[in-house]
Length: 259
Image 1 (tube, helix red, strand yellow):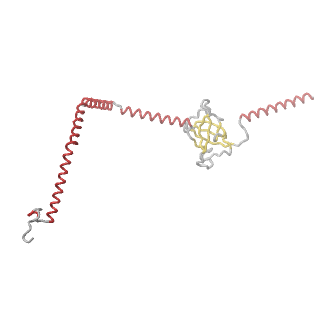
Image 2 (cartoon, rainbow, N blue to C red):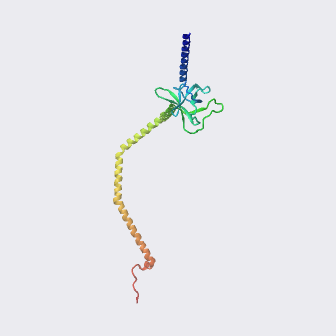
Image 3 (cartoon, helix red, strand yellow):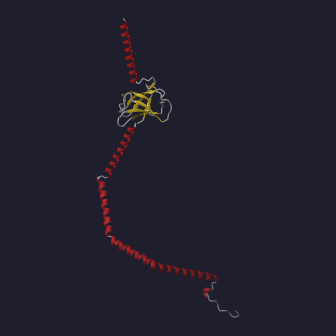
């Protein structure tokens, strides 16, 4: 009788212990920590490669939750719906933005990064018709790079098209004709270089002759003209003072009797 009671107690103890171990494993594997969580929805407009259920959600680098569910939006297949479990008390506001981030370029493991620039500190609430509050998104770093590279590629494509349009057959013919004209002008200048030198030498001689002969003679003529003008001015002054000069001249008159 005592032996049966002992086996029964041992069996109950073992079953209880195994049950506690199983419950502990389930508790730890499910991430049950006793913390309260709120559910938020995010609509991603890009590929979520590397993101899985239970991927972490970080707020300014601090882990605050995990991804609960990932699925394609039924109305718009370009959108990916995410349900996020975020710890209660995390300051999710209208200015909070969610974006896809990567832990490592090699591993490809992604997570959701939450950031708030403080533009609107009003707490985020769900709107009428929404089952959960919706956190707005920003393009990931890879998406920004892809957009920049696409714009750069389009710019190069436009430049290439412009160059092709510029270098069509008609423009190439005109350009060749321009080069031909320039070459002819260069050849002509080269052939007439000697004549141009003779002309320059002749011009230099003419300039020297003008400086050594013509200018001095012109200066002397101007000087004579100035002297003549001065003499005429003096004569006009004398006539104005004594009109009799016109009859008797500038010589003094012969004294009369008794003078």
